Length: 464
Ligand code: ADP
Ligand code: MG
Image 1 (cartoon, protein in one colour):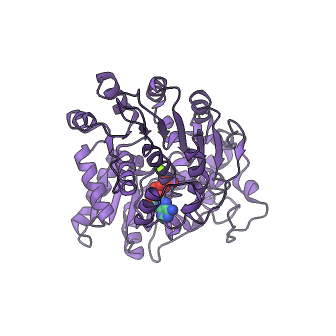
Image 2: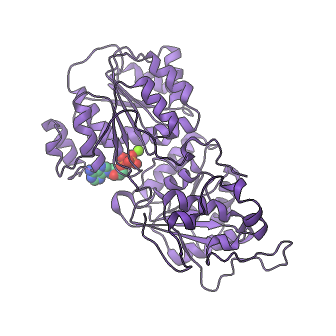
Image 3: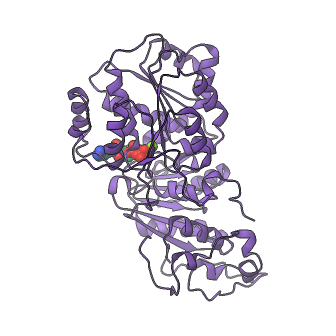
């Protein structure tokens, strides 16, 4: 079955710009971007010396007051690209009666992270920022909102909740930012976002940041932004060059043992182990915590069913480095930035190709080295192929010396070798590989066609 059907980010074709696209500009210093001395001092203090391309492109346009849609992959510094123009605007006089800037983000963790970036960059100024998100008692947030923060960062659901209680007013808003817009729409926030945007003053400036710009994001941009300038920094670079990406073919019953052996072999500085379900995440966490070779507090776990206080604590421990192994669902797959993550393990292959890109993007932050491993069961070959087509790059096959990744008990259906190479596709049962290719990836050429003809088993290609 094609479980990517209907997923907006899986449409394959590059998004059409809503209007003319501007070419990314280069700048080697924050001093050329039109920032005031006070903001430049904050940038210095934060230790940022050179703007990233998305920052160099977005900041001057946002400061000029135009609506901007910035597309760039994760880990490219999108947060500061909207935080700095917001701070700059907050230094100018504005209206009273409510926050002057609103930032909408898809997850609670991201709300906290964006607020932290604000606090880091607003250091020394009087500009206050409050994060509002579900899972925390609303009372505390109401008290904080009553103190008139200039900036509010929140998840759409909770922002809407405050809006209907009358504890937040949008009448003084100068700027609205949609961060990780593709993700917010993916997880069903569109109605909430639209309700919020309809209540914001028409005169506001709108910024939108997204790793991908599928049609639903284009629609929001067309409806709620004023002649947005589109800046696309994503060209052909879905997964960062510095991230090495490998896969293991493994029986589902052998996955846990493989994980243990892999952790032993790699001894990662910090690793995120991604699982598909909350229950699966709990199970792996529990089993890892019981291993004598690991200390229990080295291993942590995060997913959407945990209380917000637990999720906050886990993220803190992971950021501080006391937790070294984080078992997680895709809740942390987007946007979360812990720069010392050296390894990613896709214990379960992600359901959607975009989730793969985002999971893997949790390592290799800001050009650091990173490595990502994906566990692929013999039945999941086609999913891996789809990922490879999406990232236009082949994953290298890996093996652990002396480890048998296959349950050697007799199986009902034999695994046959499809003569395209030693690839995962070879491990897909012949019946599935031959009888149902159309159902699995309609109208798509096989990866070999996409990536070039005549590819041999051992050849590693550069990313196209
Ligand atoms: P994105 O939103 O594109 O995924 P983030 O805004 O989370 O990326 O930034 C990734 C990391 O890079 C963060 O740790 C951030 O502090 C750091 N960072 C951002 N801009 C710069 C810069 N100009 N120089 C150095 N580090 C930066
Ligand atoms: Mg981000």
